Image (cartoon, rainbow, N blue to C red; front, side):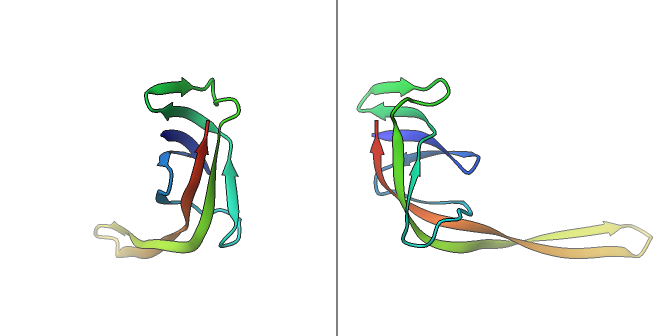
Length: 103
């Protein structure tokens, strides 16, 4: 059984006991989170597609940790002008583990 769920503006294909990184959530570590914007549910070949969300379906997850991603270097340069700017950025993520998918 799997589901397509929208979490923090992005769509993810999730299954039970799967771990994934999503954009930073405001919940504390160890807290349970419920996502009710489920777009599709597949239960052993029986597919339910929502318009836009499946009624009564929800996905529950547990927040494992708040982490930062790898550093992305942004380097700007204009030739023959002496203009060089180096900047870095690290995105904040939340690691969650899917507890159950309810259709």
